[in-house]
Image 1 (tube, rainbow, N blue to C red):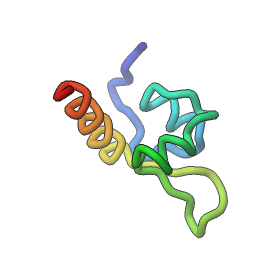
Image 2 (tube, helix red, strand yellow; image 1 turned 90 degrees about the horizontal axis):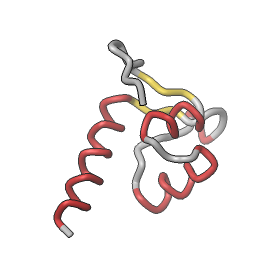
Image 3 (spheres, rainbow, N blue to C red; image 1 turned 120 degrees about the vertical axis):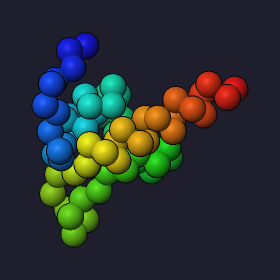
Image 4 (cartoon, helix red, strand yellow; image 1 turned 180 degrees about the vertical axis):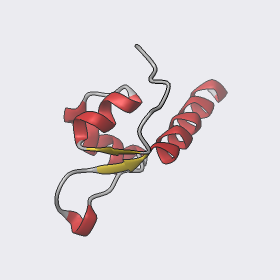
Length: 69
Protein backbone atom coordinates (compact mmCIF):
# COMPACT_ATOMS: atom_id res chain seq x y z
CA UNK A 1 0.00 0.00 0.00
CA UNK A 2 1.29 3.43 -0.92
CA UNK A 3 1.43 6.05 1.82
CA UNK A 4 0.65 9.60 0.79
CA UNK A 5 3.19 12.22 1.92
CA UNK A 6 0.29 14.59 2.66
CA UNK A 7 -2.66 12.53 3.88
CA UNK A 8 -5.99 14.34 4.18
CA UNK A 9 -7.03 15.85 7.49
CA UNK A 10 -10.56 14.47 7.10
CA UNK A 11 -11.82 11.32 5.37
CA UNK A 12 -15.33 11.56 3.93
CA UNK A 13 -17.32 8.51 2.89
CA UNK A 14 -17.25 4.85 3.86
CA UNK A 15 -14.85 3.89 1.07
CA UNK A 16 -12.30 6.57 1.99
CA UNK A 17 -12.43 5.68 5.69
CA UNK A 18 -12.27 1.94 4.98
CA UNK A 19 -9.26 2.42 2.72
CA UNK A 20 -7.54 4.60 5.32
CA UNK A 21 -7.76 1.92 8.02
CA UNK A 22 -7.50 -1.12 5.76
CA UNK A 23 -10.99 -2.57 6.11
CA UNK A 24 -13.72 -3.29 3.59
CA UNK A 25 -16.04 -0.31 3.43
CA UNK A 26 -19.03 -2.66 3.39
CA UNK A 27 -18.12 -3.69 6.95
CA UNK A 28 -17.54 -0.15 8.20
CA UNK A 29 -20.71 -0.08 10.33
CA UNK A 30 -19.49 -3.15 12.25
CA UNK A 31 -16.19 -1.43 12.99
CA UNK A 32 -17.98 1.72 14.14
CA UNK A 33 -20.66 0.03 16.26
CA UNK A 34 -18.73 -2.94 17.63
CA UNK A 35 -15.08 -1.92 17.62
CA UNK A 36 -15.32 1.81 18.28
CA UNK A 37 -13.97 3.10 14.98
CA UNK A 38 -14.23 6.90 15.39
CA UNK A 39 -16.44 7.89 12.46
CA UNK A 40 -19.67 9.84 12.54
CA UNK A 41 -22.39 11.36 10.43
CA UNK A 42 -23.29 15.01 10.81
CA UNK A 43 -26.89 15.17 12.08
CA UNK A 44 -27.00 11.34 11.70
CA UNK A 45 -27.29 11.62 7.92
CA UNK A 46 -25.07 12.01 4.91
CA UNK A 47 -21.66 10.45 4.43
CA UNK A 48 -19.47 9.06 7.20
CA UNK A 49 -16.74 11.45 8.36
CA UNK A 50 -13.54 10.71 10.27
CA UNK A 51 -10.55 12.76 11.35
CA UNK A 52 -7.14 11.39 10.41
CA UNK A 53 -5.78 11.81 13.94
CA UNK A 54 -8.72 9.86 15.40
CA UNK A 55 -8.18 7.02 12.93
CA UNK A 56 -4.45 6.89 13.72
CA UNK A 57 -5.20 6.75 17.45
CA UNK A 58 -7.79 3.99 16.89
CA UNK A 59 -5.37 1.94 14.78
CA UNK A 60 -2.66 2.29 17.42
CA UNK A 61 -5.12 1.13 20.08
CA UNK A 62 -6.12 -1.87 17.97
CA UNK A 63 -2.46 -2.75 17.39
CA UNK A 64 -1.61 -2.49 21.08
CA UNK A 65 -4.55 -4.69 22.06
CA UNK A 66 -3.54 -7.35 19.54
CA UNK A 67 0.10 -7.30 20.63
CA UNK A 68 -0.92 -7.87 24.27
CA UNK A 69 -2.66 -11.15 23.46
